[in-house]
Length: 183
Image 1 (cartoon, rainbow, N blue to C red):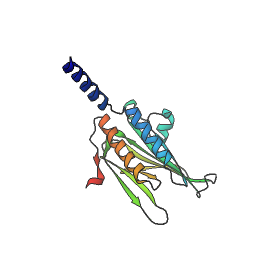
Image 2 (cartoon, one colour):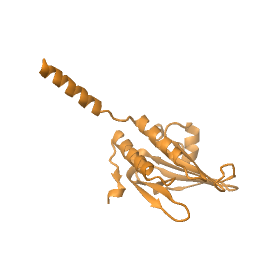
Image 3 (cartoon, one colour):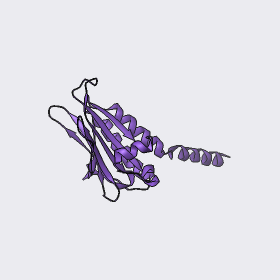
Image 4 (spheres, rainbow, N blue to C red):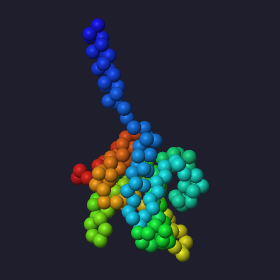
């Protein structure tokens, strides 16, 4: 009886420790943490499949296939004239990538007038990657995107967690994403 009880408890412990975050949980975590760690003059936005297809097509600069839309990762920012968010928006940037294209992710602390973190998401170039720029008073432009760059507040712990979540998202999709901070 003791042996059966021990095996049962051991099985429950292993089962409890094998919990893994789903793709949706990971996407929600990434979105919430990027939003929670905005720079004072930025309004960040992150979309996966939580965007209207027509809006995703516009930001990507092309009509996305069903497969591309299912692997969509858009990260962007509206840049205000100053730290007062009620001031005008002078630039909107949206970086649109396919999750399957991510090869490496790293974090960098930038210092100077303002301290902030930059998370660089490097791409292999096998899938589409476009940067959408729309400056106040000008037409929107789309350009090739060699890597996605996420700007966030000076918070090392949050930057590290977002990087780890992006690496985990790759695992969920069966993609190996390197941690660029270990080179």
